[in-house]
Amino acid sequence: MGDFNLALLIVAIIVCVLVFIFNVYLLVNYQHPDDVNQAYFPKFVVVLGLSVAVISILMLPADVANRQACRHSIYNGACQLTLPMKDLWLAVYIADAILVFFVIPFAIFYYEGDQDKSVGKRIRSAVLWVSVTAIVCGLVLGILYGLLGKVDFTVRHLSSATTSFPSSWSSFSSGQPCIGNSKQCSAYSANLSSEKTWTMRATFPEYIVALATIVGSVLFTIFGGVGIACLPLGLIFSFIRRPKAVITRSQYIKEATELGKKARELKKAADALHQEERSGNKGRKWRKNVKAVEKELLLLEDDVKALEEMYPQGEKAETAWALTVLGYLAKLILGILGLIVSVAWIAHIVIYLIIRPPLSPFLNFVFTKLDSVWGLLGTAAFAFFCFYLLCAVVAGATMLGLRLVFITIHPMKWGATLMNSFLFNVGLILLCSISVIQFCAAAFAYYAQATAAEEIFGHTLQSLRGIKYLYKYNVFQIGFIALAGLTFIYYAAFGWRRKRPTGRFQLSS
Image 1 (cartoon, rainbow, N blue to C red):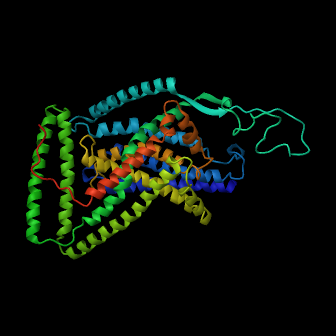
Image 2 (spheres, rainbow, N blue to C red; image 1 turned 45 degrees about the vertical axis):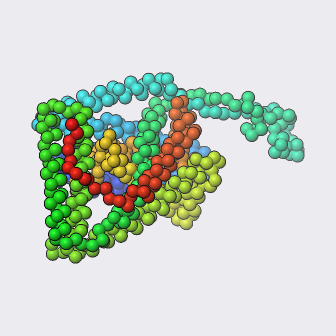
Image 3 (cartoon, helix red, strand yellow; image 1 turned 120 degrees about the horizontal axis):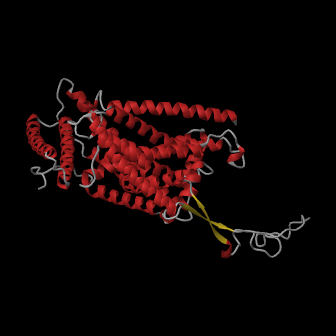
C-alpha cells in the first residue's frame, strides 16, 4: 500500500511538470507576433492559470486513484499514507478563485492600459480597479457567509433498546429489525418524526469554493450547453461547406477585390474609434462599435483564409490543396468522434442525473470495466470526458460571441492570439473548471465514490443554504440539456449555410 502511494506521488509530480511544459508550448505557438519578447507578466499568469485549470481537472482521477490505495481500509482515516486530497482540493480552488477574480483582471487592465502612459501609471490604474473589485467581493463574501454560510444536513434520529445476546436470531426479520416493538432503529421503517435537520457552519474556504462554483455553473450551463453541440457539429459542417474545387484566377481577383474593400472599410472604422478613444469618448456606443468591428474583422480573416484555400499559390500549390483536403477530412473524423462523445454525455446526464432513480450507471460502468482491463484506462477515459467539457465551454463562448453583441469574442488562433484574449479564455476556463469538476463528481458519483471530491462537492455544496435547491431540482443539468438541444436544432436548420457579411460596414450612430 505504501508503494502504491509512493508511485502515485511520483506520477503526480511528473504530470505537473509535463502540464507546465505543455502550457508553455501552447503560449509560445499561439501568441501574437506583437507580444513576442514582451508582456511577460500576462504570459506568466496565462501559464499559471492554464496549469491550475488542467491540474484541477486531473485531480479528480488522482482522487479516485488515491482512494483505491486504501480500498482495503474501512474508512479513509484508517490509511495513513493517502495524499491529503481535501486540503489539496481547497488549496487549488482558492488559488483558482484568486486568479479569476484578482490576478487575471489585474493582468488584463495592465495589458489593455493606454500604451502612451508610463508603466507606473498603468500599474496604479490596474491596482485601483482590482482593489475596488477586491473590496466589493470581500464585502459580498463576508455578508453572505455570515447570513447563509451554514450547511443543513437532513438526518434521522434512530434509537434502540438493549437486551441480552440472543441464542437465536429468529425474532429478527426485515419486517421487524428492531429489539422489542421499536421502529426507530431502522431508517427505512422509522416514522417522519425521526427526521431532523443537523445544522453546522461551513468553513470559509469551502464557502468560497461553493460561490465560485455557482458563478462558474451559470457560465458552464450556457457556454457548455451550447458548446457540447457546436463543437462536433461545427467541425462536421465545416467539412460540408468546404471548397469543392480550386477557383479560377479571375474569380480569385474578383473575391480579393471585394475583401480589399471590406478591409479598407474596417480600417476606416477602426481609425475613427481610435480617434474617439483619444478624445475620451468611450461610452456605451463606443464599446458596442468596438465589438462590432472585432467581429467583422474575424469574419474577414476567415474569408481571407477560405480564399487562400480555394486558390493556393506558389510552387507547392498542389501540395497545399492536398493538405487542405486532408485537413477537412480530419475535421470530419474528429467531428464524428466528438458527436459520439457529446451524445454519450447528454445521454448520461439524462439517464443518470435528471431521471430519479437513475436508469443506469452508464459511463460509470464503462469506466469501471475499463479499469478492470488496465488500471489507468478507466482513469484516462474519465479525464478525457472531463477535458471535453472544458473544450465545449471555449467553443460555446466563441460561437455565442460571434452572434451576440453583448458577448465579447476572444478567439484562440495559432500564432495570432493577443494576451488579452489569452487571459480572457484562461479566466473562463478557470472559472468553469470548478463547475466541470463538480459536474463530473455528480455525473460519475458511482465511479468517484468515497473520494474527497465527493465530500466537498457531493455533501457540503449540495446542502448549503440558498444553494442546495439549485442542485436538488437539477437546474443546471436541465439548462445544459435544453441549450444543447436548441443548438442541435439551430445547426440542423442553419449549420449547412455559410453566413457572409453583406453590404457596407458602418458604425452605429
